[in-house]
Image (cartoon, rainbow over all chains, first blue to last red; front, side, top):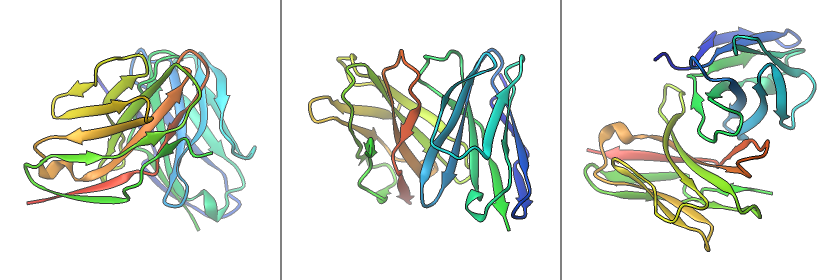
Length: 113
Length: 116
């Protein structure tokens, strides 16, 4: 079956702009998590959604937001981009909220100039 | 506080040899899960192996095995018969309180290079 799909794969934005990233989970998976990966900070948890509700949120400013749709697809948005937001944004899905194993997409690589 | 520690930024191994990647963790929960992921240069995180805190036997998945020492809070990944395609970043991760809303925390990773 198809894996986790993230779009776009690569994008370049300038400071102050906003960006929306999309994630389609594996069919049947209802939980979607987002992570930010940078060389300096490593993998950091952003948020987790289950059944259209945010269940958990990491330590990121309010500029980072997300949502989940009824078909389990998820989007995350970053407003007022800063240079430090340049990162690989990884989406992961799992069948249930309490299922430990996560299945990741290939990520969206954001560059902020 | 650092939950997951991977002390080896980089490791080299000869093709067909075995290699151990270290991971120690910190938790006060009795129920938790430990995971290893592989990240090739493409960026995708690939799940390798899982160990539950109550599992008495070490987990194995093909050439991957997890050396789980609960008292020492270590969960080392052993890759047997290394292949060139094993060259990648490897991340140890933990999810505490599997029945609570706890996010998965990752270590800093170890870059493994397999030499021909």
